[in-house]
Length: 100
Image (cartoon, rainbow, N blue to C red):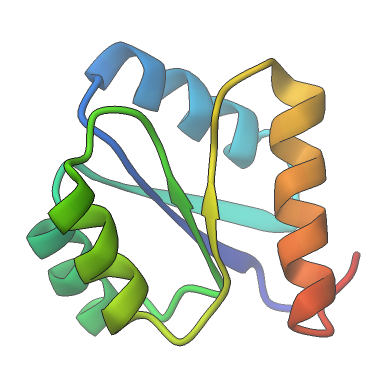
């Protein structure tokens, strides 16, 4: 089975690194980071993601740009630990019929 590609977008590098580490700890998941809406759109041209996580720091306009561009589930990630992160991704995967 191919890995589930998860694109994480946010402005805080240290938080983003932690989220990426947590995602990549799951053997069936692969995370990619982007630090702006434009970077996320560029990333999607080379890696087709199944879930997009919006982290902290994006402007309202950037969040709207992401929501308008992507056809996969876009989930606002508010923090709260690994359990909440995993639950958000699993819920989004369920929306796509990709539950693990």
